[in-house]
Length: 245
Image 1: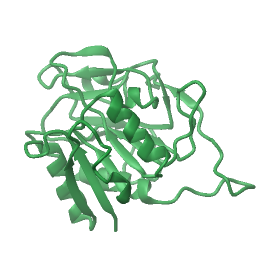
Image 2: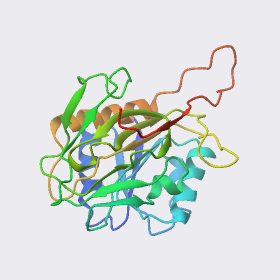
Image 3: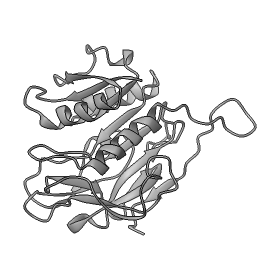
Image 4: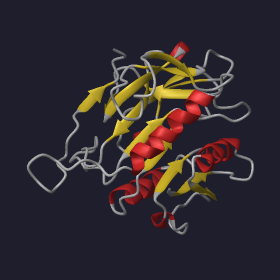
């Protein structure tokens, strides 16, 4: 199993990091919760097998450092999509936006119709193949949520939409190693990346969500298949649009 860094701001009080740790430790991994301190450069994250950016500081500095760990050190990474905006709002620039992985986000505040789950639209992928298509409850009670805004670009494979007031927003994305990002000129990702809505604070993940989290990490840690006809991974997946279909 893997040594996983769960990186978060305010690690002492952040319950999301702890709940992710409990799930993944129970799956046999060794997880270390690490405070991001607003700067990842001195935390030794390149020594880990996988990084989970949980309730992490959302700044251009952190975004660039996380991309460097993915691209230069080849560390597979899950980025949890969340928002602190205390209202339902479109056009939010969140960490994955700053990482050139997608466009802007729509967020939902917990008592203003935020979702308690996702709508799986692709269950042929290794991450989602344990579940039927359709709605899957992931948290017991609604908390702040965010998804890639309708019509915004993203890279990778969209596996699920959000629910409730975010039902046209992309909520789960698997990005293969070597996929060109949205920068100009494009920069290929140096490792697998997952964008996921696994944020919970005062409440809990469901058992199904725990399985989905484990499956995300399993996919991240699995070496990508070799490209056909060569030994260099081609820059592969095309840019998608969050069209909610």
